[in-house]
Image (cartoon, rainbow over all chains, first blue to last red; front, side, top):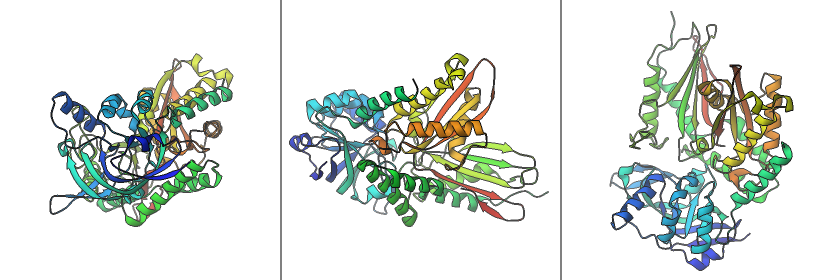
Amino acid sequence: MAEKILNIPLKKEEIRALRVGDVVYLNGPIFTSRDMGHFMIKKYLEENRPLPVEFEGSAIFHAGPVVKKKEDGGYDLVVIGPTTSIRMEPYHKMVADLGVRAIIGKGGLGDGSLKQFQEYGQVYFQAPPGCAVLLSEGIANIEDVHWLELGVPEALWVLAAVNFGPLVVGMDSHGVSIYKELEEKAKKRREEIYR
Amino acid sequence: MFCFTDLYEHVYNMIHRSATSISQDVRKLLELALSHESNATAKSMLSAMLMNEEMAREKEKPLCQSPGFPTVYVSFGNRSIPCCDLKKVWSDAIIEGTNNQLLRPSMVHPLTRDNSGDNSGPGVPNFEFDYIPDQEYLEMLVSFKGCGAELANAMQIFTVAKLERDNDYAGLKRWVLDTVIKGGGKPCPPGGIGIGIGGQMDVACKLARKAISTRTWDDHNPDPMYDVLEQELLENINRLGIGPAGTGGDTTLLAVKIGAVSTHTAIVPLAISFHCWAARRAGIRLYPDGRKETIL
């Protein structure tokens, strides 16, 4: 298990070099997006409208922050941590086509994503769940926000990450998902415990 | 006749405490889990959780970005009745907590998904009232339960055959373990599960939520049969290897709590309510003579 620091935009080779269990810290802009954010991206693409940020080489964080509005109209980050990723599984193809290299969240994604990670060179990072104060230490400031009309949790926040982590590779680009492996093992063990 | 007024400050303090810390029974169980864990990733996840909780308390910041959904459990007796508008007091305090960045504005219309912006809205918070005639005190317990955990919940009306009573309830036990496996890392393990048994669908679901939200996680069920079942399920679930954050380890759950009542002879209503490790809750008892007791 290696420990690495990666800079955004992320390169495909860097992602291919990661294996399940590696620990990673990220630097650069991170975009938050969850249910409604993904829905908006889909809508914009369908309507051929320009997206507010460049997703090529990006890291999407399944998260919605707690923020404080500043007097100048900007926002300070109070805390942020991961939300349950599986809700965004239906958008896996769209996210890959956008050129997103890394997805940060909790609980993992499904088989569709795993297959695609192999094909496109993407990775899933597990953030420590429920650790919003700790993770916020790795965000220097909020750079921008889009689609705030969706509400604070669902908007697309642009966060300036500085050694953001620890993130554990939960799904890599070689077809390995720690969640899937553990699920299969657990099922077998359950058969032994209660037949 | 005496009745309680001026509850706002008590209520706001409970919101502050539950947003910025976890109940200490759960913290102790996390510390114990860390000392027993054999998996390296699991150890680092548990350490992160403990460190995060400490930081949240010190900095008075929300320990998780999501406030979950709040339920307030209120019980009172003939001589400990609240006579202020309790629902308004709680709703106002939640709005103030939101404006002070203790709670992220997270309450939305269930279909249009429009966000009210301050966690106000019909049914927020949810209330469960209980009237116990001889109870001397007014008890209020708030539980902000995370909603990633809700995604793993399950409810089924079992048939008597499916329960497998004469096979040591193997049907029920398999269902519980399979539900935990299906949940995987999604409900932010290592948390707890409440199992509601009996009544009808609505009753079983409320019992499940209440058991894991209001009991201390290191307690014992007063009913010996359920106590044994709780311990057995907990032990076997922790043999599954799902681990903290769902990335492997010896600690998948810290607690299994059962709430049970009678049911109809035709059915076996069962519900499982998942709780994340972030047990954000606070409970107090207020006595007519002015005494205040902290129970969670």
